[in-house]
Amino acid sequence: MAVDFGTKRIGLAVSDALGITAQGLPTRERTRIEADLRHIQDLTLEYSVELVIVGNPISKTGEATPMSKSAAGFAEKLARRIASPVELWDERLTTAEAMRVLRDSGIGIEKRRQARDRVAAVLLLQSYLDFHANERFRNSAARPVQS
Image 1: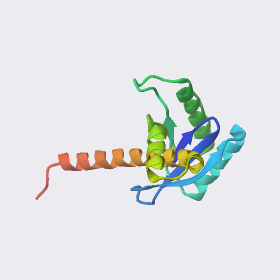
Image 2 (image 1 turned 30 degrees about the horizontal axis):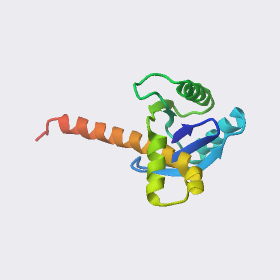
Image 3 (image 1 turned 30 degrees about the vertical axis):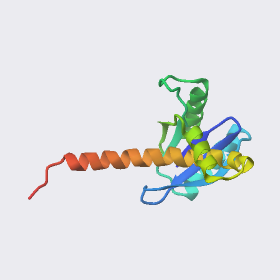
């Protein structure tokens, strides 16, 4: 599961059972931190989530930002609440990419705003899934073939 943590909304996405593709879930309008954590906890149970990644909005140079510190704090609180491990994952430019994808799709500005966080979470999770699929492929290709 991916969490695109924001000050007003939380974008959410889950992968298919094989961990190949990411699908968006309804965006969570932020309320209280306790209610937000409970909502994600409920989703981890509903979808039998094995791992939660929280987007880490570090700067283009790789430095921590005020928002990345907030996301890390949220990830720590979430990790104390759920059974699944929680990891931070570099989300540089996912929101910008989400807006580009939505703009290119031709939908109106208001619908873009509503979908932005969900699409950012999907892109975040898909980048994680793709990275690990490539790692597995690279590791299996490096092993000699037994005859």
